[in-house]
Length: 52
Image (cartoon, rainbow, N blue to C red):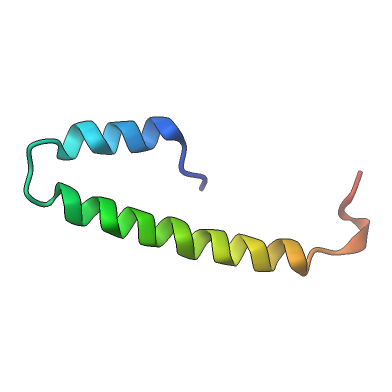
């Protein structure tokens, strides 16, 4: 599941004015960083017959 800009905008609107909004944004950023690390490892170990 990829996180799109629309999803982030919806989260921003949903958490706007809430005290938990900042915490949700921090968690979202951490999840994106972790996902980027895993996808980087995935692309590094990608098989050679993957390019078509």
